[in-house]
Length: 260
Image 1 (spheres, rainbow, N blue to C red):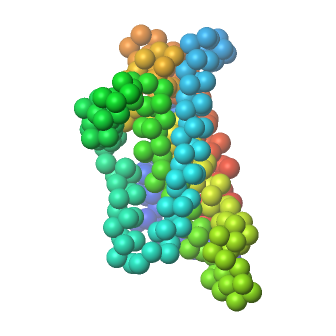
Image 2: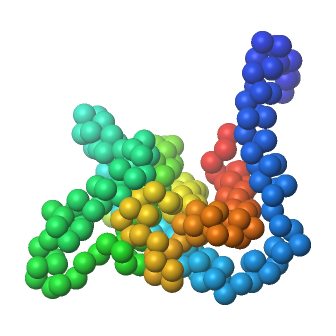
């Protein structure tokens, strides 16, 4: 395929834009305490934080798949007007400030929340500032990534396959199980991977709804924020680790997400 030369009027701002993104990453690498990196990575506090982060991110990813796959299917097959309304609701956590998401979660599931108050009065169980609250906050912000990725994959399936199966007597569940889901599997994997990465990096909603209690709700981003004041070397080391995870996620999606 013939590649056109980039016009100077586009090349210069493109180069500046690329530099705008690259410079902070390079600056971070220059601040990483490479001599202490192994000690930082193997410290008990780091292992505790990473274990909590990965565990809650895995749990929220599973929830995203369980809830997001059916929701994506509904988005594909519902009426256009309904689809616009549902897609607006689904994408709202993507554009809303994270702290607003945390406040909304408190309003919904806090001790005095719309859904949380009855549960607290009946069972004495409060969700905020628990490990479960971390999973809820991560799921809230990561679910849109999962839904939109799976929806895109479902839209790319040729309806001829489902029509042929229907003619041969297959029911809706059989079509979904044996045709739709296998064909959409790359999109499902991409959605799960993006949801995991977003959950792993969640900060604002988690801090507002779950707090930053060591060993209970303090995930890696929260630990980085706190370490900036007490131990900058720890903050830079953990930041490098999360960047490495993000890069691995992006590279794993190169065939199922990025255009060729």
